[in-house]
Image (cartoon, rainbow, N blue to C red; front, side, top):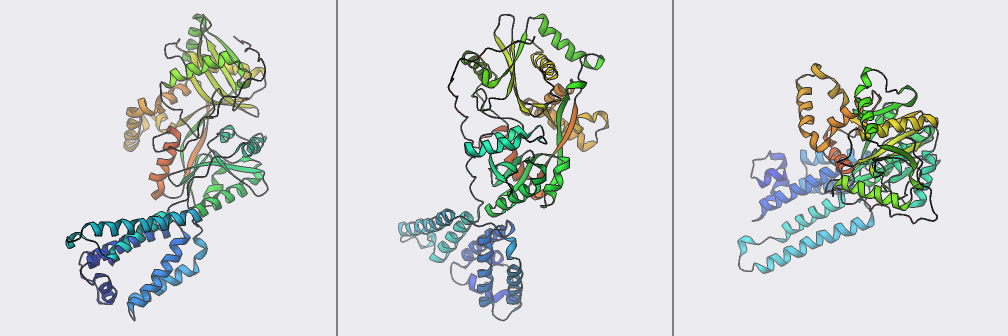
Amino acid sequence: MAALTALRVALPGWVRPAAHLLSHGPYGRMHGGLFAVALLVLAHGLLRRRQTAYWVALGVAGLGVLMAGRSLLALLLVACGVVLAVRRAEFPAVPRPARIRIAALSGLAVLGIGVLYDALLQGREELRVDIGSLTLLGVSVALVVLLAPAAPPPPADVCTRLRVGELVKDPSSDTLAPFVLRHDKTYVFSSDGRAAVGYRVLLGVAVVGGDPVGEPGSFPDAVDSFVRVCDRAGWRVSVLGVRADLQPLWRGHGLRVVGIGDEVLLPVDKFSLSGRSMRNVRQAVQRTHNMGVTTAVVREGDIPEGLRRDLAELSARWLNGSRERGFSMILDGLLTRAHPDCVLVIARDSAGAVVGFQRYAPIGPALSLDTMRRDRHGPNGLNERMIVDLVDYARSRSIDLISLNFAAFRPLMDAGDERGRVERVGYRALHVLDPLIQLESLYLFNAKFRPTYLPRGVAFPSWLSVPVVAAAMVGMEFGLGYDRRRPPEPVLLPDRQHLPTPHPIR
């Protein structure tokens, strides 16, 4: 109604009394337009279940009833007010006191700037703005600030991460559990403290990386607690990398779950280089042997300072000035001993120079790939060689499973000639973008090892939320420019004693 009034559109008789109040005077059209903007902001706040929007909407409905008098519009406003009153519990998002102060200051700042603007335009009446318009504009700005989601929480402290680290050691933990220990994550625990959810917030979206950790019996309570925290803060809930068997935990809170790919798993006892299907891997590994490459497997906390510097220089050359990427399947603090129990596979050339390394996070009888680095001018087949030698290392230590990379959209790439029209367009887009996102090349690399696959999906509130949820997830995974709140990498811990050099296994 307010927008139509501003546009001078003819209105039905039963809304004309209220419309007349908006359109009265020389600034009527401006009042109608600004009031429409304020109502749109308020409507968005109601859709996002903000408690402030709930109370403001009740107040606006009551004021509208008084303005409309005895009319159909008044009856409609009363009905809307009754509906809101009986659904009060569905508006849990409450702003913090600091947000209320900022909103009030923002509204007052708009009024102050408007008054100054009018003072500077003395004698130019056609360009001045009346106090009613300034008030509506200030209220709209204050509502935008007040109804915005809460700011992202700070990353968890050391004590909290140590507590989560104990939950990660639960025998039921899966291969993504170690990545919950990233230093940029915050945690919500179940009421009994036996399970936790690790997450980050970006663009008002709380993204969970992987599944809850700890005792599976406490997972539902941890998820319930997490959703309550998000509801109160006004964050959208989303999950990246959820297992199929845990999808009901999130569907129970109204989230949709869609498969986006598969975790690549290498069963140690079944892996072999023999057979025609492994010919490419076998040849790649043999090339590195012919060139004199050797490998060693060492615990990250046992790396001496000289070797650490060599590895750090190799990593910097590989990144070539770009920042470290990843969120759901990568740790941070590379070579800082922030995660000292990680296992590194280190490759050296015939002269003894480091030409590549990979880092794996231990989790029960499994290892999960975290980082792959190599000299861009080093021998071909280095990554294949390090993986194969790690399998031998795992077999000698009763490690059952190695988790490699994530194969996003694997069914699309596996389909081959059976792709439909839409699938062909999607595959073509992935192929064209591969130099930037490297999904197809990573899939082809994984497929050479004839692995098994564990489907994983993404959970999100609704299809309408997909753009902002996707933007948050992509920002976290690829470290885009709008994700500016990542904490700095953990600093290098000083050596407390002389540490042994790695023991070569090949």
